[in-house]
Amino acid sequence: MSPGIGLLDLAGGALVILGIFGAFMVWAIFPLLPFLLIGAVYAGVRHGVPAAGRAALAVEEAVVRGIRWGLHPLALWALREARATSAEQGRRRR
Image: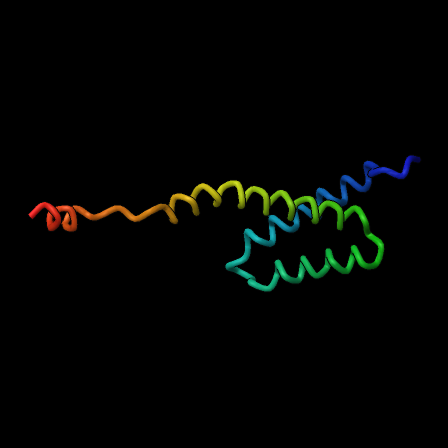
């Protein structure tokens, strides 16, 4: 078999991704669950479960890129030059 990602690796990675999303969905019920899951993934990466680690890192990178893509225009809009309010405009006209 080639040294790439096999079908079993993909299945394991998919289960890790589903577990991460499931953990964040129940965040309000059990707040420590995501941290425990992330710790388990980290331990898996350190101790030889490369598919889970690669899948988790790919999801993390995609989430960070998505947040940056969504928040960058919002941040630019929020940091735009402040406009004068109608009350300030009225004071200037007098």
